[in-house]
Image 1 (cartoon, helix red, strand yellow):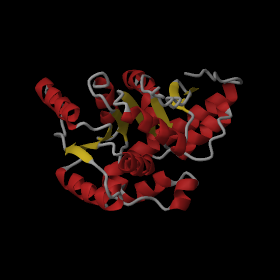
Image 2: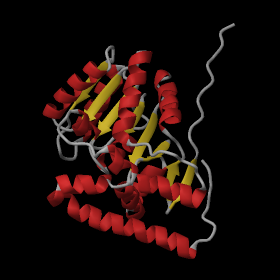
Image 3: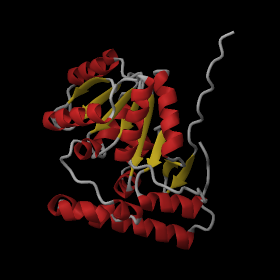
Length: 265
């Protein structure tokens, strides 16, 4: 008799200011993603830092898409802290998109599961492919493409989805930035038989074209400051607005909501 491997349980979610965030960590989420990938199941995973959470809070359409994801990982330390504070989640680490990408690539190489890279520029993708195959011998990169930095036509979307389908990849990493990457994954959830993982700036970081914050800054929640120092003109407005809004959301929850909902999904 053939024994079927039991599926790995999907992480449960908790409500954080109206956004359904998953209580998960690197190890359990990697196992779940690879379990789904080997089965070629259509799944979606987002990694949301403070910026992503606030964007979802302020934009209902985006929030509705995010809440439909299978997993919304706590990418930022403040997001993890908020889950622990309001829901006693007990998370000892965040689930950072760039780090998670490496862990999935290691597992994919070991299990011979193909990956697909969708996003960024041709230059970044070339450097990223070289880095990944050197770091993970045996990794099967089933395909890659850099879409135009504009809204795709229906024909272009259909062609892109067909290329991903035909590649045989079990994991599709999407690096289009927030909110484009999540909207792409949500729009094509039913068409792509793979786990779509939105990883933000991971492509540029692992291609060696964007620096990663030191570990100590990541641990204490200062990665945003490191990125701001490196790209002040592009990021100052984002962090001024989103960080302030996030703090206000936390204070409002503390002051006016004694028993936040802890619904699971």
